[in-house]
Amino acid sequence: MHHAVGSSTLLSFEHVTKFYGPVIGINDVSCRVGPGITGLLGANGAGKSTLIKLASGQLRPTQGTVLIGQHQAWSTAAKHHLGYSPDLNSFYEEMTGREFVYTMARLHGFSRGEARQRTEYALEEVGMADRARRHLAGYSHGMRQRIKLAQTLVHDPWLLLLDEPLAGIDPGGRREISELLLKLAGQGKTLLISSHILVEIEQLSSSIIMMSRGRIVACGTIAEVRNLMQFRPLVVEIVAEPARRLAALLAENPDVQGVEVRDSVLIVRTRNPSKFFDQIGQLVCAHGIEVLRLQTLDGGADAVFEYLQQGRP
Amino acid sequence: MKLLRAWTTLTSLTFRRLLWSASTMMVLLPLTGCLLFILWRFHNRPDLATRDFRDFSEFLILIFASIVVPICALAFGTASVGGDREDRTLVFLLVRPIPRALVLLAKFTATLPLVLGLVVGSYWLYCRLAGEVGQVAFGLYLPALIYMTLAYVCLFHLFAVAFRHSTIIALIYALFMELLLGNIPGIAKRVAVNYYGRSIMYAAGANEGLPTPDPRWFEPLSVDAASWALVGIAFGGLLLALVIFSRREYRDLT
Image 1 (cartoon, rainbow over the protein chains, first blue to last red):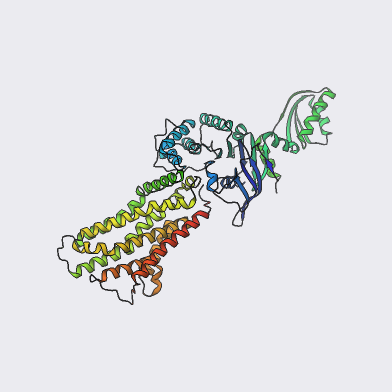
Image 2 (tube, rainbow over the protein chains, first blue to last red):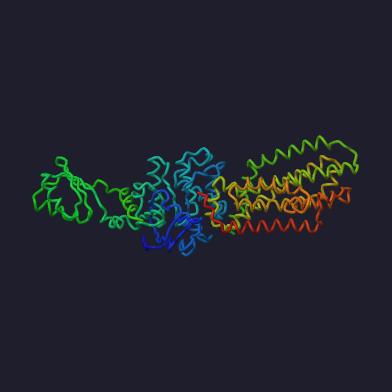
């Protein structure tokens, strides 16, 4: 399976398999992540962390290759282009936020002056410039998330790997960070954001990668993934007059699995939503049925993800 | 130039973090205990008899070769990398554009002067406090202590990159291999680093009247052989640590 995401290839996985002893972490994964925000979705144990660790060069693939541009992700050369924000709360607690970000800049080899300049820029970007004098040990979870983000930005990489970057941030902060991530994407950077909160990803991402049991189950733009869903069973609620007449007509449709009538409300289960939506318009027009409301009951990304997971061995 | 700056930053960061760590406290306590013993036993004794030199030498060999040097090296040698592993901050270093071998060399470069400083500094202080016997002893045993420090620091770096809970493993090693096997009769003691250090120390003290130990309990190696053994342990251990650290995946980082 080969998945194409985005136009310009920056981060690529080519038939990557990773074993942890006898346990398989990810299995024959191929995908390319280009500029913009790509959401990496999956339940716990789906393989998201392994994918991120491979991309950040913490792990080496058992088979296949992981490339950041032209460089193997494991190599030192690739690290120049990579900003990584791990999903952990450990820091050099004795440092202030500013010292931490400055130290990370210095570890990229910047001179004192340049590191200071870049630190101030990064802190400003994540909204921590006025709170960076405090020691990290006294920071809230949200402040720690911002500092982690600042240390990923300090060397201006074009690839950002962010593991749960919005976890623990208050709603106002989420909006600010989301705006920052969108701004970075607008600058042409490539962002791979791992999350298990689908709504978060839907609001940010132009593309998504869905993982389950070590494999990519769906990959592409959100529209492309939606197209994959056309044969997914769907429950639709219809408020119509006369409801019973519409129920009888729908029951004859081979793509409808079941119809339930509650006063004027129909609950319809279809196995082919795309065809169903094509046909229902013609049906109500032909029989003069008035449709007052039509809505899907399980069309959210969570249901999509659940369905995709069920479909995999 | 950028790589050099990054490397010196990491070395300086490691040095500062080790200096202000719990390891320093852990090391200062036994050193202070020894200091008090020295003050009680040797201070203000004007006579420089052979007996005093022998007593002081045996004290130094016992305390420094078996306790002070291994403890200082263990405390800082395992903490330099092991501390980052246990605090889960190592990931912040491994995603920087510094080759892994250089990351470990920076850790080593920061640790060695710290341990050497503590060992040589406390040794110098004890020798000063012991009066004239101390002044005689200082130059005699210093090379052996430096060799041992180098060997232990390298060895405990190897432990740190190879084992997750390296401090515990190193403590078990120090108790079992260095204290127990290092002090039993026969050739089993050759697995202990301090055997080679003590061999050099006994040879150095012999000209000043330090008696050679009973060969049934301790048969020293020649100075050359013991020195080469310590240098071999040091460079072999460091090389192995560099290879492991460069290739190893640390799955427990995040």
